[in-house]
Length: 512
Ligand code: G4P
Image 1 (cartoon, rainbow, N blue to C red):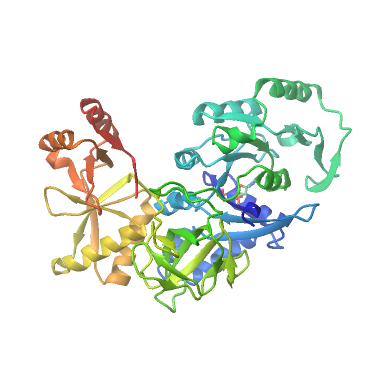
Image 2 (cartoon, protein in one colour; image 1 turned 90 degrees about the vertical axis):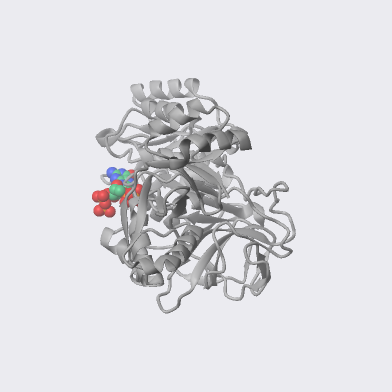
């Protein structure tokens, strides 16, 4: 069963076409029958939740969801795809990053006219941190884009990856005639006057001379596809296509089915846990509040790592120590939530709870396993929190601790001075923070400018840390776990200190 799961995410810069591609993948996979439902469904879901008004105002989704579709090949083998949605707006949160810890592979969508954009790159770095293999989809070749070689070289240079073109567009923009599969030599062509792909494959197509030359160069100039190099995160196969016109989408699904790894072992301090391990284990990578405004419930999203989960099973959360019975788990299907009776490694289940489950928690039958590797990311925006009513310090502390556990914000307690600092990786998280402080904790707070620009976790031996602290007390803080953090005024500040303190490491991520 395990081999039949593919759990993946799509990473991209806003507007590259992630939503369009998601729709087409689900359509091809038979999960939904009308294009446009992904967006419509998102809006319906948003309307359900109160504090998510912010999402509505901004017209974006802060929350990630899980979409599942199936596909049966000619031999009757069924593969279940779990597509984890990562919000694609500029304002992303740690949620987005953490979702990537729960996938086994990713599709990186690039706009053919724009190449690698800043957010593509950031998300790619997160994938690299965990050697998540990437399939690249160069989208929008039905429009005028950059030269294919240019795009391939940019991926190779900027991301330090080997690239292997798997298909090649025959012309782009107005001259676009179809997509050549480099392995089979077949061309998928738009039919008649419309550019819509109707599934006709033409084997005897006469390629324009310059295209034939390009293809010859491409085949000679790039390494052959090597599945081990891909799975190790060293090589990316590149597909060209158009999500809008439905070109190259089937090929992408096939690539995920044939190349992408099935559920992988997950790291613990005592070594990796294999999906074949009999005991049910999993980890929480995301907690979402108020999905249903009628209840104060939260949904914890658990990635199942091993074992076959059955409804009603008793699992022990590492943070709690005593077992809970999971009576009404939720499987997220494309159209509806359904009650799950059983789930396999690679599947995601939603567990309703009242705040007992935290991001980073391990759930297991025997409570002997602890998964590691859920990273915190250096915040890019830091703010001081000031209370309107100073008697509410205790409530504020509790709220900040809770919300940082949930991954909404990070909190830093400076060594000197009493004003706590919150850090986020996207502006939107600050709005979420303020509205949840008011709605859930009845705390009115304002955010003020902070003298700091970014933060780095520092590591080193005790003496090096002490020496550093002697000189930099003003810039030191502790995170919620009590680990030391250097609060920096600028990126320059970080590299300056790194140079002066070669015995210390200044890290932009911290693993829980
Ligand atoms: P995102 O989720 O990555 O932010 O991107 P989304 O799919 O919303 O696509 C962004 C815009 O790019 C949309 O146009 C979409 O129609 C267009 N697009 C996506 N794939 C292709 C493609 O293969 N070819 C071409 N030519 N365009 C594509 P929009 O006008 O901003 O939105 P809409 O009004 O069409 O929804």
